[in-house]
Every structure is written in structure tokens, then in C-alpha cells.
Amino acid sequence: MTRKILGRYIVADTEICHGKPTFNGTRIMVFQILEMVASGRDWNSISESWGGKVSREAIAEAVNLASQLFTDHIQDHISEYDVEPASA
Image (cartoon, rainbow, N blue to C red; front, side, top):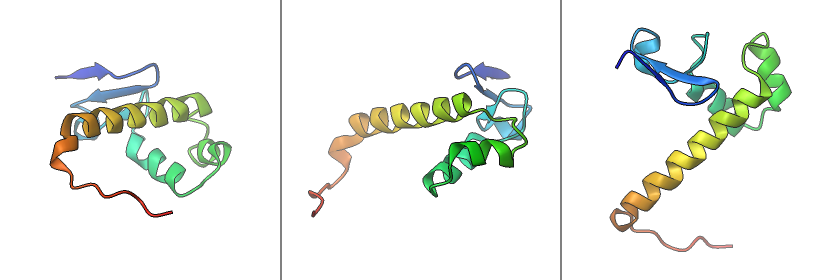
């Protein structure tokens, strides 16, 4: 693999950041943005902190892709997990 397009805004390129998914045209890794989202940061604030290089639309794509991957992974491995119902 040299370059794989993962979405409109996200790519993985073995020549950039060791092939970790980044936002197209940057060296900003998707996991960095997802960690900021997970910490509760406002998407406008996230975009501003990266000088506008990551748009709200790009953040939304990252969140949607992560959600899809998580869902697919869980479905593929559900029998491997000893899952107990969450308490309210």
C-alpha cells in the first residue's frame, strides 16, 4: 500500500505518519482529532486549534468512520467478549 483513500477527507499513506490515517494534505492523524472529540472539545475549537486544516466536515467523517469500524469490529468479534449488561 502506498496511498489508500478512506473517505473524502481521510487517507492512509505509508509515506506519511507510518501509514496511520491522516487528514488529506496534512500530517494530522485521525486519532488525534478523535481524542479531542472524546474529551468533549467543541468541533469549531478543534478545527481552530489546527489552524483550520481540519474542517467540521472532516471531523464528522472521522467520527462516522470510527463508529462504523467499531460497529463492524464488535459484530465480527461479539462472541469473543464476555459482555455483561451495563448498570443504569
